[in-house]
Image (cartoon, rainbow, N blue to C red; front, side, top):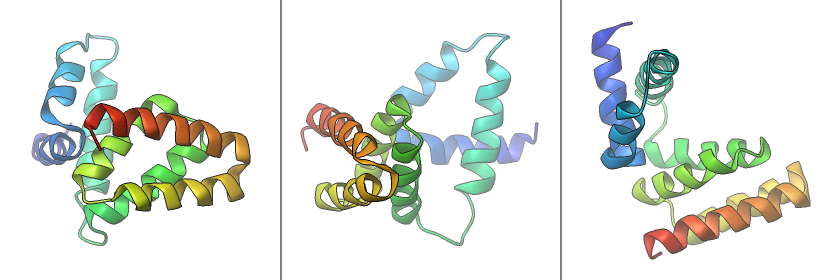
Length: 125
């Protein structure tokens, strides 16, 4: 593991998902799943999110669409909250989910709206 890239990824991950969420995920990791935490933090958050080509808001919008289309409700809820932290508005999230409903199917859109509403409600948005 590249320690510098892990540290960069950890900083970005905490800024998007919230320090409390990330620290809880790392604290609950054990010898079985810690390598996955390290992989995600280093490559997803350090190597990918740490690139200069797109800002965090744009990356959040892309993630919302992909995660919704892939039907990953747990990840979607986390990333809706991250999108809000990255400056994506409630209205923009709604528009992304409309696109998902058309291109990935109404069931994906319906589920995504439900999950997004839960996340927004939890955040008081």
